[in-house]
Length: 253
Image (tube, rainbow, N blue to C red; front, top):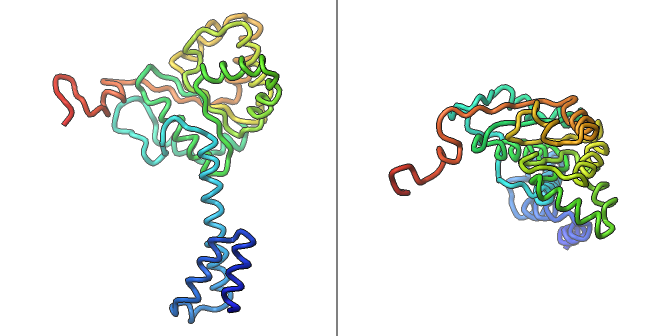
């Protein structure tokens, strides 16, 4: 009865994992030789691990990453100029801790989006909050927010996230209201959060692509300053073609 009362209290205190582990300890004789300190330590470890896993699940759900990617699954066999040591160094997330940015450039099919999601997934596992957007979706959300009165709240939410991933940066021409929206976002995040950009455009062309010299200067300064870079250069078929089950001149097996 006393043991069941203890389990019930753990459940009431929302310590379900610890309660289940305690119940298993009571039912199994294999724990009898352990000291009190060892048994309580194992119970606490079980509860802590369960809570951390739930936090990670929430961070990944909130991030809404495009791919279920991981650093461990990155393909280095396809020649595209991807340095394993650079990836491993960045996977420590020190650049996020220091509020630096990361720019991944390369032509279509070089695996930019997957790489970005792998870094974002590692950030989630390291305890950082993440938000993933395709560039067009981010601009659309800011445009809607300007019209419905939620603009300030959206900017505040974007400012607070540890890592903001913007995929397909500058894939479409930027209009006048959008330039100012982006400057607001990047100004709020400058030296307070990290931004990861993937783009087909070389960095040296960004100024012209953004347009309006004054705003382009301000946006580029906040993104490029303190930014790490990965430049992908595909040799041979694209990552999509290389990984496709359908090969040229044949059918999927």
